[in-house]
Image (tube, rainbow, N blue to C red; front, side):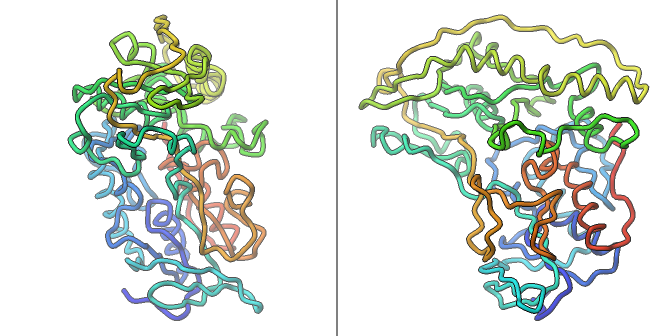
Length: 424
């Protein structure tokens, strides 16, 4: 479809967040358009590497108006399947998507509403919903420039497949979900792996008889009368906690726990964080033991009590916690000689920066997040959906977008049906 000169509401981004918002707008009969800078549908999932696999079960891809009905709800989609799922959602709900429409500038009008300049022309609109997520520009630490020039360096955003890398060992920097999954995949491909471990926690694949995502989704969508929910973003003791890496867990091989201690016992080399570079020598911080201990405590300190309380109050007959700890304590080196270790590639899994170069409004905080409350900004008519920690830790998940999008629709004064699913 073409680009109209004027529309009541414009949604920026046709990933699952933008399409969920489009479903609500469509249900209310609102004239709207969804702008997508890419030439194909499927959202940011198209940017992932070839062997990428969801860490959330397939049933999490039940979107409003498009429930998951295939035969493997407890399986885990690979990249191309989740891309097809999101593209199929756009078709199923007849979302008014314009492809290859890149936003160049969003400016508020003195008379109200906005002027939205794109590479295909300018649109006037009363409302704008920004649905571009929180992972925009790959973040490389300054220390990358100090590494030997002989090394191949790339961010996980640019990594596609093991065969593209030069022969030799791989140093992976960062132990959030992407870092640990890539470490496992490359190790299984026969690479010797050195993993610089940060402060991301880990979560069990299953807890009390169900996939942990069952309890996470239940807490995101729990009715208020149960009196149990995930902590809100305004409850965080430090706003920087929004930047913490997602806990490691895997959907590969049918889904399994990811325990760095076990990976080390099986031959992977774990390192502390990098403090400095002297030629081929990395100087390592002595924080490996502390970071592994924190990963072990993460689930129990952040999630276990909430899940147990939900199970009790919802009257769910769940078996007791049967997790078994793995006690291996890996060595903690003080330095690493890159050449002696045979390392030829450094793979940075160090996250992303949030950048809105087209946003002509001073509403971005010091960490790059737009100031908002449940997606509603201080600028009348401007909303965000699908942000990291928009409302709580579930906001950027496949199912966590739904309650936030519904809240935005109701804030806009729309009468819309509930789009939430009961994930229990």
